[in-house]
Amino acid sequence: MIYLIGGAPRVGKSILSKKLLLEMHIPYVSADILIHMIKKAAPQTGVTDKIDFKQKSKMFYPFLEQFVKLARYDSNNYTIEGDAFLPQELELLRQKFEFKAVFLWTSKITLKEITDNIGDNDWILSKTKEEQQKIPDYIIEKSKIIKDECQKFNYPNFDMSLGFDSQLQKAYHTLLDQH
Image 1 (cartoon, one colour):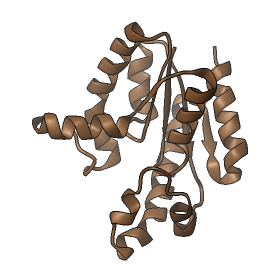
Image 2: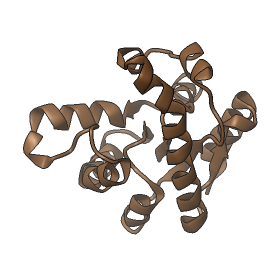
Image 3: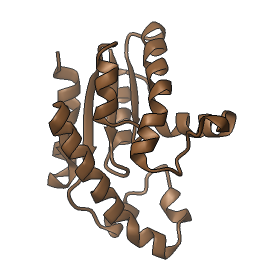
Image 4: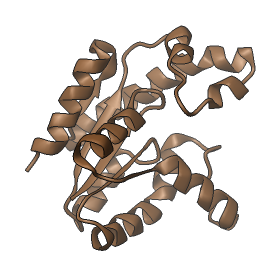
């Protein structure tokens, strides 16, 4: 089965992917890695992390589609996580492939919460203080769009501000229990 974990930045997508790896031995790849690979190796595609996230999702879709198509042959299970796809694009994918998907988002987050939980990816620290101050609003704005699309296209979604650990558990069980 292919598992897709989408959502806003800094809400736990990588943590959920690592949980699936450690507990269920389901390998994963970050869409960030794929985006940066495409950006460097094939800049003519226009795929980059420097564009509006809706545009990035549309531009990334052909690569996601091929990855899902090919990953099915390589492994019985595979997870792709990231903020490079939205429910609207998964609707196109759903017409061709079977997969399970959840989306993570947050209705509230502070810069302190973000910087206290940097994890392995410290891209936030490379931003100026002024840029860092805008990150919580950006995450919340993106989260609202994700939530609305999830409701429109009927994808399970979780507001991580309602209790990170409990929401992560719910998302984990939703992925494994979906039929």
